[in-house]
Length: 410
Image 1: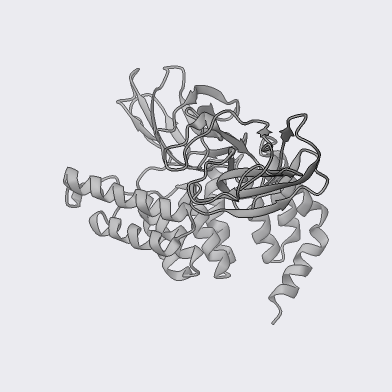
Image 2: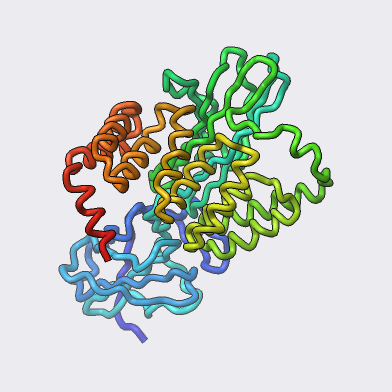
């Protein structure tokens, strides 16, 4: 039994208590962008000198608790180092000569403060846009995406587009819900080679972006940049039922989700299931090649990308994925040919020029590498990360090939 008046600890940022057994209102959770955070506390005047301030935490909504430690100087704030990301409950016990403010928290104890520790940006993937219409005034861009993050606000998405070659991004919609889909009525003024971009901002203030494949929007007839090698090929295949198409798309979605989480073995299984239903689904073939590459299965990876390219011979994702796989197989000439196909149609693709420079280094072609790196550093100044890497390679060009040769030496 405790004696004397209990101390009261009032935590900064604390708004309302929520039961650990019931859903926690979003407004009761403070999102923080780092695993290290300062938690403020205040002890009411007249409670006497402090003897200790102890902080406890839970990552399973109060089912179990662990003690973090004590505030050494008894002066707020106390710095808490979260051992993991996720929803965390915090609980203070303060002690003076009269005793502690409460017993250690047990199963079911309601935290003083809920925080969402979110130290990673959202994972964002923009899927291939589908352009529908007859090339007249009524055309629609069906935009689809996948976003993974545990701390998204209600409307975290914005969508923009640009028409090459000016590179100016223009708004489609802002503060959109994360529905995974948006159908945009294309204005008559938007014609040409178009790229779409999604931006996602989480509650911790971290932003991620992703670009779509490029499509060409023209007056009738309407054709994407990535046109099938043989437009009649799919017409001769068995027509899938609506239920089969739905099942194949669901398996593709499952495979992509496993892929985003790094579970490439599960991704391969789901993608192969999708291809059993629709062997000509290029999206599944590209994703299969990507996951097989991640698993170190280079030959099957290359075969999957090659199959995708039979339907989509100019698809950037398939070409760059195949080039990456061919580099791993040390087939540098073939890899270079695939990347040159990309820049033939997208000459301002800085990242592809950077990869071409790396391949030239592997081949001992320093002059060619310099030319490719210069393109990567100058053709798309808005690609800040790529430009920085390209400039670093230019500065270090004399030693790059030497280091590669040393790495290749058994």
